[in-house]
Length: 439
Image (tube, rainbow, N blue to C red):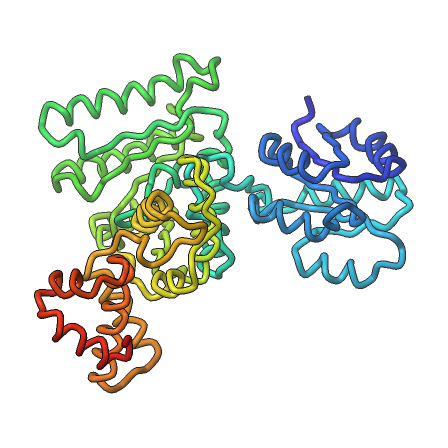
């Protein structure tokens, strides 16, 4: 089987025949005339190159390309157009399509275009993250997300080891899966070790036995590639005792020397996950020089991606619980935009999962979110500060109005019930509602 994979999407039988005749001799080619089938094949086949006809139905080639990019932002693509489509060619270049070929297809010239596109940098061969389950948090449209995916591509293809800096609510294991799947040794196993489970002296000994076995395995069963370790994740480095950290750092120095002497497979990628950048201080400059550092952005720094992330999670939990929720209200979206998310991506996922379960409507309302008072106040205070509300009295009036409205909505507008919750006489609560303009 040819090593390089190409996916062709065209309804033009003549063009398909010409392309098939020239490419099938050089590449592993799959072709289809149906957009839906192409999207499915794309996720299963992981092609290095996508060839699209601009003339598709119901969407044109450029629109279909945007859908492929959502799954793999680094996919290489060639677009087939008619001779007169100059504007389409310009738009294609802006979208990141590598080359545009005009009909009729000249086979020799077309083959040369394909060869040139496939010879471009390794970073462009990043196959994305759609094959790794529970990575919806990598979706989005913002600059931070684009930076993250570009850096993921670099660390995946690099021969250097990786330091992964994340925080609460970020699953380092899933990021390691993405790096491993896109690495040179992606056909091997990813082995994850939770360092926090090796805390006592006897457990530390067991850890070193496991490490030695993993390294020896490379020499003794090298004929069974899929059983070998391709990536080793050392998780929770920041949770272990300083003496254990020091032992691992010393091992990393020795491991690098062993690799240089050719005694173990140089393809093994080691990933160390850290809770924050401050933990980097235990690494000497000598050891840090052997690593690429990948710092994962917090959700609070990716607010422009929230609509996409929320949509993905609603879809995910609709499927899980058999619901038919369509999305969230504008009020919920505004609340989430100003909420600081101390629990990061995991907190957003928990909020949306519970809301999908609780809501009796097609649209998730603020009352459906499992909120505590602190979360509500934090979001409203941030909103006031960002909207430059300078008078403290006005800030408190806005907070009280939003709080009372939410409590009334959750209690089916039972004023007496909310008054009891706030430990106020009903008459006093009614007066406060009039003060803030809710009555």
